[in-house]
Every structure is written in structure tokens, then in C-alpha cells.
Length: 125
Image 1 (cartoon, rainbow, N blue to C red):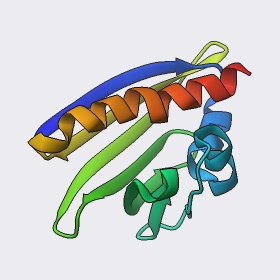
Image 2: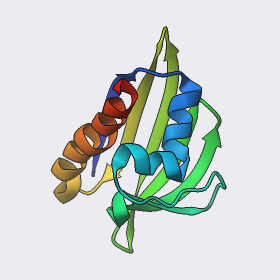
Image 3: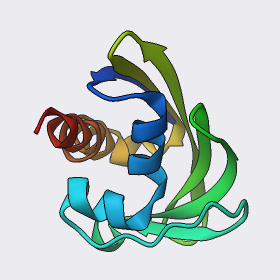
């Protein structure tokens, strides 16, 4: 099992970034793919047209999102996304632990490009 730790500065307030990460309509805007998301702990979610499937664990509005991401039916991993104000930006810190070794390379590329990269691009427009 492996862990990914990344951080990116996003040009927006923590409130704006939090909405972008938790509102299904906004997720679809920056990701370009359908999303199902609820702010209810214990609720299932999907992103990137089903490439990411998981369960919401907890939310601290404008500060933190905790989720479980699933790899097949019998394996899950833990995702923590923390938001920190940084002048006119938000520092987005991601820790994704429990990643199966064989999925690590794809997950790292996905976080950098499809998730954080797309989110950054969305706020730069």
C-alpha cells in the first residue's frame, strides 16, 4: 500500500474551492465529466464519470473533506483534502493513503492532472 501527498495553490478562496469540490454541478464544470456528490456523511459519490467511486466520511465546511475511495468491491483507501487560506489563493493539501501498489502510478497521474490540474485550470479562467 502506498500514500500520495500533494499540495497546490488554487486561485480562489477556501469557500470557493470547497464549493468546487463538493457541489456536483461545479465538479462537472471543472472536471468535464458527470459527478454525483452529497454533503451527507456516509453518502456514496462518483466523479469523472464513474472513474472515482467512494463514500463521503466527513466535511468541515471550507476547511476539510474526508472520503473513502474504492478500488473494486473489496478495497478502499482514505482521502483527506485540507484547505488553507493563502492570500488570494487557497492551499489545497491532499493525502491519499492505502493505495494498492498496482494503482499508485495511475492515481498519482490522476491527482496531478485530472483532479488538481483541472481544478487549478478552472480557477485560472
